[in-house]
Image (cartoon, rainbow, N blue to C red; front, top):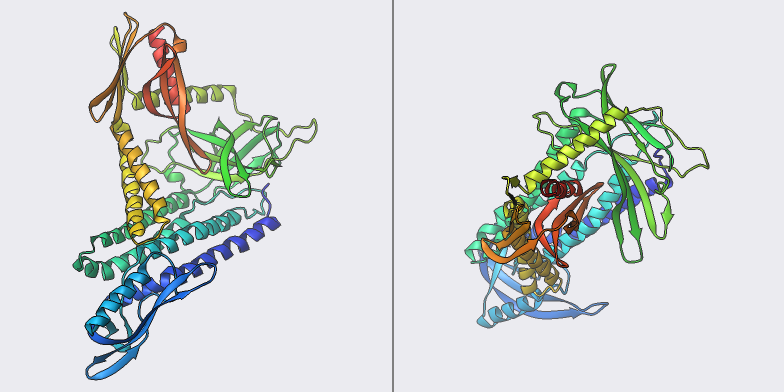
Amino acid sequence: MVSKSKSSRAGYWFGGGLLAIALLIFYFTGGKFISMYVQTATWSTTQGQLHTLDLKYYSGETTTSKVIGEYSFRVFGQEYRSSQISIYSGSDNIGDYWQDLYRDLSRQKARGAVTVLYNPNDPNQSVLDRTFRWSKLAFALLFVLIFGGFGAWILYASLAGKPNPKNTLSSDKPAYIMLFWFGSVFFFMGAFISVLGLPSELKKGNYAALLMLVFPIVGAGFMVYALKLRRAYRLYGKTPLELDPTSPQVGGQLGGRVLITKGLARFDHRINYKAVLTCSETRSNRDESRSSIAWQSEAPVVIQRAGRGLQASFLFDLPGTVFASNETHKSKHRSWDISIEPLGKASSSSPAFKRSWPVEVFPANGATKAESSIRIADSIRAEFEKQQNEIADESALKQIPYVDDGRYIHLLSSARRVLLSSLAGITFGAIFAGMGYFTVNDGWWPGYFFLFIGAATVIASVYALGSSIDVKIDKAARIIHSRHYWFGLQTSSHDIALFNERQFSLKKTFSTEQGSKRTTYYKMLVNNNGKKIPLANHIVGKEAAKALRQALVDMLF
């Protein structure tokens, strides 16, 4: 069972403290100037006299600079004096802002007058410059998102591990609270800046300021998705999990019963469910920490009536080769979790039941293996395997349509399948590249990182968007005709003699992991005298890729 340990309590303080520090630093590095930028958007302007001006350098671990000076101006016949030059307080070395400001003010001083922005309600408040510095905002956001996000994740993970006094495990809540919070920060900050600052920037011809709209749009997207997660979670409630045995061991069995008492009126009994047991592995060294999936298995979920609710049961056999929870070996740390989700894509108007729970798997205890009292009939397991195969066949046919007309087999790997993901990649890549371009122009060298990542994402997405493969297999002549296109232009063609099924192979191209869910992408190849020619690209899922290969083999041999 998951127990509340000293490390969990430490996680509360460490995660919460890291988040608080990140927010505090963000306020001083970004929040204060954003607040000043918004306030000064409605201030009035007048001409004043610049009495002193200097570009002062400060030496420490790094050299920073700041413009200092004193000026005066008159409002309704009364003279005011101030030394507040910019909306930015303190010195920094992010870009050439202070150097550019010094040159601009020097030119104004030489002309004998300087433009002053002042608060019409309190002329004692005034500045000479309110330029919005994208590089400084990017620096502040990068810091708060990395360190604040890490702190929020530690805090959330520590709270999720809170024990249940009734010998059951509470399901993980989707991170909708954290998502909604981040979305709100992005939305309201971006909306205020856009409404108050965008009109004046556009009047100056600064069309790059339209990038301000990215923040409220992204924030709104996070908020909508968070509300969707919250609504889906609250429909079925906490749904506690009772493990059987209560202390599962490596080499034994891990079973469980989940009680569902809420949302029964909307529970669709036509949906079949699967349980997914995952062992995650975290590799740590001095420089970084990386997580991956070390072992994963799926099993059928049996749903039955239980009193006034429903009971979902599952059972796994744990191999003796896996590692127990919290077991560390060569800088590798393991953790386990169990999830229940629909088998295949649920086509129902009712929200499908989805839950996950952290579990603890103990080391093997000699010859004694912990077994479960739960029993899953062989017929149910066989039906589950059959459904998995049918889903894989359906997915393969949907992804890569193939037709056998008697003599020819037609196979099409269309670019339309990756349309949405490619457009999303192009959009986000362009945003990153745009931020990089403007921050580099502002003299902030880390902007090159954003520029490189954004440009690489755009190039890869455009390539995927236009790539397609058209295959025609002559069953009588035993010839494969393969034509490769990019946005309709043929880039290559191959005529391959077909001898046996061993010529077909699958190759994993890349994989993505989100929590305990791994998505793997494959391409199917055919061997042509030692050279492997792609016949299908971007096949999602190993089972779908295997089903596609087997379908071709069955039609040809």
